[in-house]
Image (tube, rainbow, N blue to C red; front, side, top):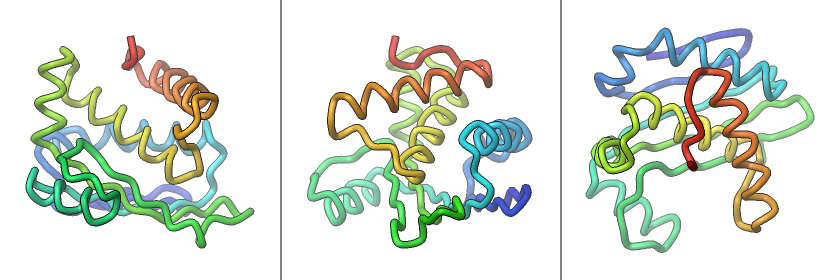
Length: 154
């Protein structure tokens, strides 16, 4: 599945039913995200992994031997003053679905939260330092409220 919009490309590889069934809503949210963060060009690949695959990827790239819900891989050398961002986001849908149940979140809301959290990483936001984490959370909460998703941190 490919979403194109004004020099913007987001390609979902073998998207799960949740994504396929909500593609229009996700596309609308993406358009708003790109406007909100003044992105004129972006190229993102989105993939999906099993728990085992995600654990292996997490170990290979982050040296953490555990499964996680999502990983983002920004290609920093492509980021420039032209606002072009190239990167990859990989989801582990079984973990996302387990977390949705555990935290009493709708699957789509949790997916979108993690997706936009990942996109923020691709455009340069990080949460290694507390001040950066606070800023990133504020950006997430503000944006998510615009697409009808309540604060995921409360």
